[in-house]
Amino acid sequence: MGKPTRITNTIRHLRFVRGEMTQADLASRIGVTRQTVIAIEQGRYSPSLEVAFQIARVFGVPLEEVFQYPDDQP
Amino acid sequence: MSYEERRIWAYAAVAAVVPAVYVVIMLGRLADAGAAEVSYVRPLLVAVAAGIVVNFLAGMLIGTPDRRDERDVGIFRYGTQAGYFVLAAGAAGALALTLAEAAHFWIANALYLAFILDALTSSAVKIVAYRRGF
Image 1 (cartoon, rainbow over the protein chains, first blue to last red):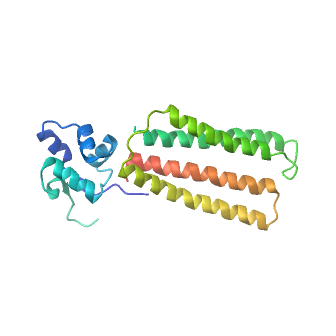
Image 2: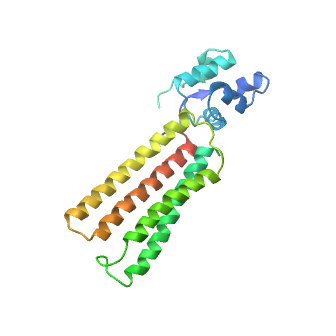
Image 3: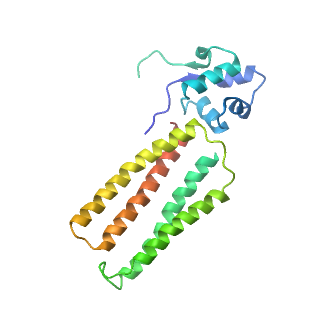
């Protein structure tokens, strides 16, 4: 069974500071479904590197500002 | 709920209901005849055909397909892989029945059961992946 990702993200915050960009709008910009954006925001899905870069590009920030990975070992 | 997830629920429902009807019919027939004599070919073929047709119709009735993205593709592969092991185990069981020279009734139904369990297992794994994470 797949484990939910340990990667955290700030997509919700970034959407908020970009004038409440909707999940549907973000989804259409990066070419995924709204359900996938919801799953990424909630940490239930770790996107591919390509989608991760696309998200960062939409917000105009470095990848590390969108996604973080905890230092402590699992 | 996305189209893909609704589609999986429909697939699982068909994979549960159609065989259940088939089992009820066959239990009635087995009450009158032994496994070696019972007429099972026609009901089995009807059950297989009904499963395919109802699944196809359900796919059309639940809505218009959404865009399928990388998460949908990944979950589909993940669930299909889980179902593959169940199907392989069922095929091995059918092979064992063949080697043991069991009645054709048991061999055919073991294979049908393997396909049904494959469908149910892969559906369950996909639904859990959609709901809890992947």
